[in-house]
Image (cartoon, rainbow, N blue to C red; front, side):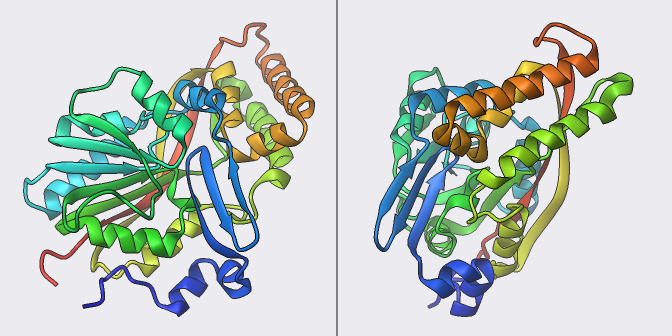
Length: 314
């Protein structure tokens, strides 16, 4: 029997036409900050430093609202059988721990050893554990998993292999949740909100040349392609789910600094990366007419992604 998530060559072409057509990549997978790119002629691992893992833990937004959305979907689509959830590309585990109240066991997996070590170093509920492994080779038996999630990670995976592996480990009636957010976060601060967002656009534009060509200008299309290629009849697409958080201005800068494009710039020219962050921070504070980088602003992060339920019988 061909699993519903097995992809045809045509689907592979639509997911990553330039990659599959040129044959440059034999595989390309990662997790949030621990990227592993396997080329025919070379292998490169990027952004697996412990400092970056700490930054992820400190600055990335924890979207509790999205957990509620996932669990509401599961309650509608599947029986109350919540034994095992797997968070793929878990990073330092900020998203993973949110699943703990709903499942007997939750396992976060990541290809980055630094991320796994950071996740293990902090306290977490007793039903949570972490494993060091690639997204495409999960250490679980076929049909063992009730929910597979990936938060801001699936765009780095070898998507055909990952989706095939998801179909293998999910039980009939199990669910898949792949979520991410757009880079262009919005700031709100009284009457100067528009000015602040113009400054933010300057920040994003400066980082755009360092964005991976694998992702294209927006990762939303990658997720949309995965949604379209998923043959599970029961699936939902979320175009935009805004999550609002009050953060210090320095926290907003810190969050952007965790992006892969900023890390690429930092790797190429550390002083230029620091100068860019300082210049944007100074401009934001000047526009707000405040001296302290701890001054709080409203940050709106727009999430998108897919939910899908594996058929109960095939």
